[in-house]
Amino acid sequence: MEIEQHAVWSKNFAYIITGQTLSVLANSVMKFALSLYILDLTKSAALYGTLLAVSIIPTIIFSPIGGVLADNFNKKNMMVLMDGLYASIAALIYFAVASGANITIIAVCLLLMSVVSAFETPIVQSSMPLLFKQENLLKANSVVNQIQLFANFVGPILAGFLYSLIKIEWIFIICLFLFLGAAFIELFIKIPILAVKFENGAIATVIKDLKESWLFIRKEEPAIVKIILVLGSISFFISGLLFVGIPYIIHIILGLDSQYLGINQGLISLAGIMGAVMVGVLSTKLNMKNSYLIVSLSSLLVILIGLIFMIDMPATATFGLFTFVIMLLQALFTLFSIFIVSNIQASTPVQLVGKVMSYVTTLSLCAQPLSQAVYGILFDIFANSVYILFIITGLIMLLVSYFSKSVFKNLT
Image (cartoon, rainbow, N blue to C red; front, side, top):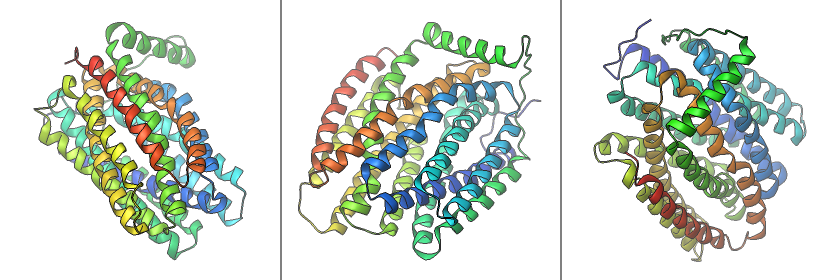
């Protein structure tokens, strides 16, 4: 089946966008509500960071397999299945929270969400090159990211207000229906189906495909390995500081309620939308050689956050400045990630995109579990002097940007 690839906007693309909006919104609300629930139960950044770290492990393990499935099976059906599984997990969390289950059950639910995410992400990423020619691929990825970030903008704000207004278990019922709505809309999507033959059985094909895609990365596009190292290094520092740090700082250190955290997360996602818009505006000026400048500027913003926490001011004022700088940081990282992903997609054969992107996801995520566990402990230790963590991290990131300059200088 051939799909018209010239125009970015079409009915088919609208189905994808709508399904992604509902799915990402539900995911955002569910994860945010769970993070508040865990922090309220434990009051510990170390335990919170450990749970986040453990929840990422399934994504790291299963992403390559998810990439193989994305390239070898009907992508539409896989999208529908993934949102159906998310709906099932939302139902499970509802019963767990309503029955007062302990933190172990919640951790299991986080693990299940991570498993589904490992399979879902490569499906969406591998669909785009089938629907759009190279000249429209960057714009299409930008639109998808804008929609996803918009859902992430609304999600935390909605979850923060709901958390203070209704019983938390009902939040997961709302998520369940959002996931079911996404699955229904995705039934109407049309994505070309690549003919695949399982000559020696499905398992043998999976192993063969994983080897093939890894050989492609190592021998034909070795620059991807260096890019992954840069992404992994950035991921190590940023994921610990932000994923663990933001909820802990706002909820515990600053002592502000869930609505402030919801506003913070919403504004960060809004900044991500701005970053995605910047991709379209700067598409003719962006190139791999100067992309290290984004990392350098981001490093300086991390140091600036540390300076903010050195100043004695009211909690709300600190919250405002902290949130504003984080928004700038998010906009830059969104710009950087969309640009890098689009370049990798464009340089990869369509039959390998899902597998190659799953390797990129897996290897760049490997640093996150250790990062979140380590920074969880560090935030407990430096609860009264968090500026130290931000300043030191920013300085180390400047070294990463210097390394990334040499990585990107020979790339186009």
